[in-house]
Length: 151
Image (cartoon, rainbow, N blue to C red; front, side, top):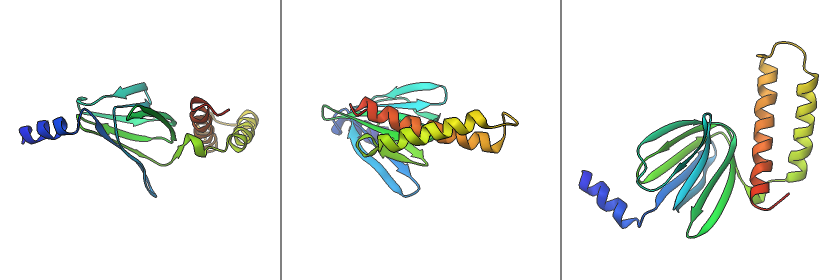
């Protein structure tokens, strides 16, 4: 069994299989050279041959490189599982940087920020938590667009 895994990795030419899966299906499916993702404890990278890893993700930017080209997507919170030959990201949402409507995201982020500033009550309220999650998702989209050269 271990020989099969090693041979499979060797025939893949030093790449790992990346899948970003949302409730509506696979958003990304590619053989990549490397991946960077936003965990709740900070960003981390995965290269071929990575030791097994399970991480909770926060909304943010996932960067990956395939065949010498760099790609950027915004993801919502979720989980990542990585190993020597594959990395799977399970998230509630994913958008490619080219598909981000930056004007709408900026306007929505401004509105959510105003709502957060005006919110009275407990710091741990459900309403505050939902607004914070919305702000993090909107910021992730704007960050992805910016990293791909879109302002």
